Length: 365
Image (tube, rainbow, N blue to C red):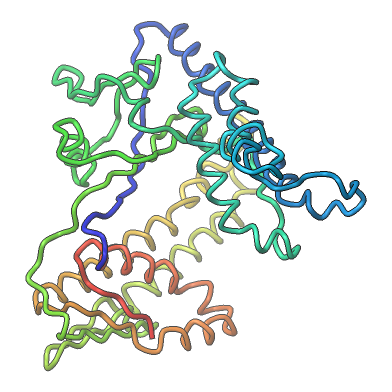
């Protein structure tokens, strides 16, 4: 039987909630220092894990050398003086204790340990390279780092202390579910699992992971919905005698091609644009198209997948089958135009997430 809860991840922008520019800048600098130390700690952890895993391959060591990767108190052949999980945590904790929250280091160690364990067979065979963590990486934390969360009506924002740093949310328009999720979190109706803090272009984003119960619908597992994904109609779904075509070629593909053509024309005309205030002004028109296509496609695929799941719920379909999907993906790989302009993978991901949230079983055929 599946879990009764689902984890939703939402990107929420944060702002430093301090009165002066100097204080805000100092607090932001502290976050950047934490990120840099996380980057170094992550690479140290994964390097030590690899050495621990491969030490038995060091055939040139003496035969009397012990190499069992366990605590020596639990096994006489053990080479560690503590648990294996604790070896890498103590490594980074001894280096950075007092310089950053230990909660971040603990979560970082746990996540990397879990990822390494999942892929260690491929590491051992030489089929996979070790993770390389970049300086721009997001760093993890738990609810322990969110202190005194409450809604402040005067600021119209949720305020809390991110460890020792006062912050407030900047959610923007209330047309999405972020306001609702944050209110539920404040009241204790839902939980926040291990989340991430990301620093990008001078802005702070919290990638919050909310754990909530799945939607309750009157679904019948014996009722099947068959859906097909194609270029002509993004989604065609059939449940018994009921049939629905979601989206169209003109709406999705032609609009996307129009955005691409407009961006191409703008780039070609940049060299004729009036200069005078540097590169930024000259390329201002082209910059408008930077995320326009991606945002349009993402929004349309969300709408299509939402319509599909709503149609299934309306007809009490407890099982959703994507027909001939694997075959279509293989064909799309051979056609550069289709692969570039039709987001099979993105649409499938959004359908899978919404189906799980609604309690619908998804089968990809």
